[in-house]
Structure formats: C-alpha cells, structure tokens
Length: 220
Image 1 (cartoon, helix red, strand yellow):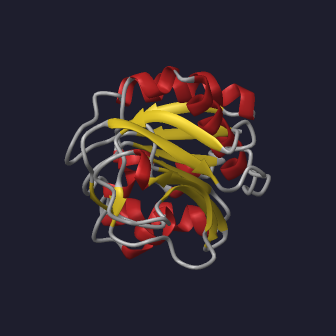
Image 2: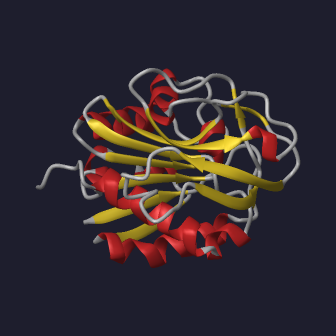
C-alpha cells in the first residue's frame, strides 16, 4: 500500500513541513505504507490517487487544488480512500464544503506557542493507545470556528486551564476521526513546531492515524 503526503501551501507556510515529511516517510513502513510526498496538485487525478490507501494533508494552507483536483479527491474518498489532516490542514480549502466535512472543523485563530495539557478522552484508537490519561506538550493550540459535528469521534481535548488563549471552553477538541462519504478521515491539530516531529509520542500518534485511515481502503 502507498500513502501520499501533500504539503502545498497557498497561505502561511510552516517551517516544520520538511521535518513532518521526513517523519511520515520514516513512519510509513510501520503502517505497511510506502510514502510519496509532493507539493504538486497534479498528483490529484483518479488514476494517481487509486494507488494510495491514504492521503495526508500536512500543514497545507489556503486553496491548494483546482476544481478538477478537488473532484478527484472527493471521488477517491467516496471510493473508500483514507484521509489524514495535520495541523494547518484545518486552514485549507476554506470555500470547499466537502473538505470542511472531511477535516471536521475549520481553523479560527491561535494564541502564542506554549505548553499545555491534553486530556486523552479515547485511548482505544491506534493514534492514542500509547498515551496515558494526560499528555503534556508544547504546540500552537488552534481554536476552531465550531466543534466537529455529531458522529465525529473525539480522541484528544486540550485543557484550557493549562494555557492561555483558548476560546472553546471545557470541550476543546484537538484530534478526532470519523467516517466520511465512504472513506476514513482523521484530523490532528498537533504538529506546528519542527521539534514535534522528533517527539516519540507525537510520532506514535501520527503512525496510528496513518494505519487507521489506510485500513478503510478496499483492496484492489
């Protein structure tokens, strides 16, 4: 099986993108995935996507696909393809309703990078099974324009009492997953900093996300 890591930006560009690409490339084999990376929207064709079990939007931003490429991605998901969005994927394709449903929520704003405490609310998922009840780490803590809709499985919440600048209250999700239109979709708001991608718990989080999203892809 193969994974496609897409990191094109049409807005803010994270300096952590190369570290994220390297980490996902290293992690892929543990999930049974050979990883390709690109910033070329031309990779989004029906024929090209058919070869991949999962597509990762790694710190993408702004409008990164044209209408033909959007149609190819939507068809891929509807045919059972997996999707993983990392951090700034929530600030990508803001005018495309299907992509918003795929990610589950849209970026609103964020405070300064700072330490915070994550509450692990679901430890039965491959992306969280390695964690204890709480996870202390430093990141850029996104506020979203709304919570994910009903039916989305929230895995991690950030404790707003542990940092400053949160606007979502006690129920502030930062990682979740769901089935969407026939495929599997996973989103994590973690992964702003370069250092994130060297952290063993974050790498295990991403590995579990890859494996889970890819497992919904039909064989053939």
